[in-house]
Length: 153
Image (cartoon, rainbow, N blue to C red; front, side, top):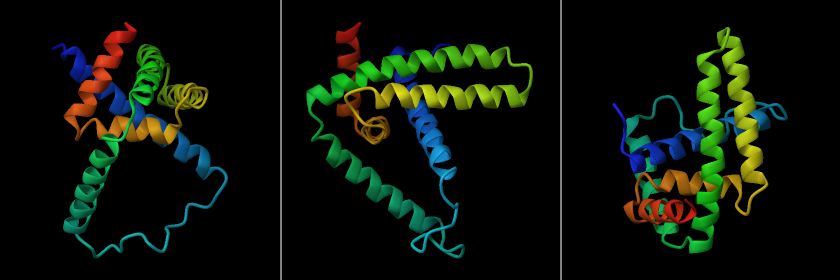
């Protein structure tokens, strides 16, 4: 089954944001200890607290996305296309990987390549990830990105 282009692009943006976040977190973890911060929730706290935090983050992201200018949206769309190409190539390479370890190495290499594309662009990894995440909750932002992608193509 083929997904509609906009939904596929949104899914890819979200997947890519996750890959960039994971790659950045992994790269940062090499330099520091992986201790749990003092502000981290304790094990006894339930799903309700996480749901409230997520809801608050969604509202904050939507409010912030209204302040994203057209130039930033255009830069995001340009970077997104490059990152999408890397992601497409990764998918093809993983399909032919000789082992799980080889596939993981390919994924790590692709994460680094995606992060480099963003770092070499006009937006930061944080901005890229914030826009990609906000698109899930903000239909207007998703539409603005879709329009920017259509203008590029």
